[in-house]
Image 1 (tube, rainbow over the protein chains, first blue to last red):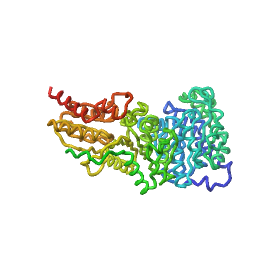
Image 2: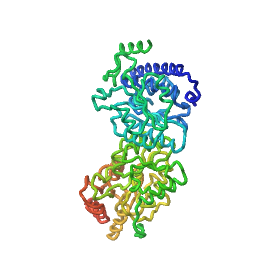
Image 3: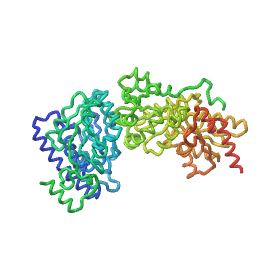
Image 4: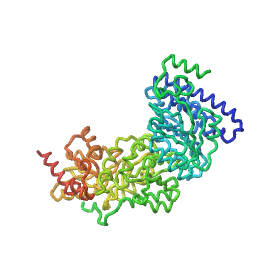
Length: 280
Length: 318
């Protein structure tokens, strides 16, 4: 078992530095995968990188060699299209060999455009269609509640994804049952596929919505591990929603806040520039 | 052959479903029930009383119900997700596809009051498309039991399988059948009656009507084989080929004529053993009327099935 969460000294800065290094690696890895596969979802991969790195390298309790351990913390990747970042973090965490990342989207690869637990250890449920992750996470949290188990369940959703009604069905049940072992992180990059969320169907006041559904809410900078770690480590007596304010395309100047990079592939020059910026 | 349908009265298969579920839950604490406010219509009041922590009511929210079921399976539970078949399958079809079937989650889906049980409530509440929606889903076992015994056995078999299962549970009163099979086995059809002139393949609440039709035909000197195809997926192709050997096959189901049992049987017969066929079922959205009225109107009675057999035999002779 990864002992980071329960036995770590209070060296938040040291831990956050480690997370930031891993997040930077995830960004570079995701872009390499996309560049080689000539397709992917770079904008969301880059906005989620710090959140994923914080979960896997500072917060969650798991043993990658025992992906079905009943006592593991569970992570549900509800924004299943962001597999560049998700597969990278799973590989970095040891669920499968990093070399396999070069097979991303190749024929018969385990690394499908959307994650499949049938193929790949570390994937809890198959996602892709939006609004599926939170209900499944709620179910896993209820199972833990029934068993009085001490595992936690984390789910990462996009913000545009919250336009799906199934999210709020599940949020209502989680609030009603006071699932304190459940944490949702909203990757609040404010852009959906083609436009800002607030111009499409506005989500604000988003924190008020979650509170009204019976959740605790924390609003933080989703690229600051020193903020993410304590936010994710300290749930209260209710389900916890961490609204992580992020930048779509974070770390690559020409992608940042550009809805056009929701999906796509940089050309060779753009890719070289991205790697330079991420090395700086 | 006339004692295949027992005379002990009529039964609501939901009772057999909950009795089996309660017995399973007593023996295995992993068994939980998930409902969409349907405690009453799924007859789970007694289950809730016996296992209050293991009855999870997500409210009127079918998408969450199925997703929560998949999550409970992820947490090591064996969830029986129960709701009216029309809403469970129609409203949550993508959850059934992605969270349950594709994810190979150990979830048992129980479609209650299936077919036209809700008669007068109309097409919104009829579930006559469900099998066409579910049949192509890989990994998903689909069972349509015919009577109380088979319903209870199907529930036990579903719990014993590690993987997704859909069980269609009617509320229509049906008689108990005299089963020729000693045990229920997923994927194994049951030949209830031998006959070499024509074969009638039925499932669910239509099986006892198929048996009655065979008796009508026998009085005319026509011997009909009757097959109870309780498992739709995986399909017992050998039993279908056996039926095709009679040279005339009729399917009977409480479902649309498109994509259900008739479609499944036709796929096998057309590609492996072509012979004349009739597919009995419902043509589309149905007019107002009780379940019995609707079944009679569309020939889903002993006489209607017998008529189809006569027609088929006449076509074959021509």
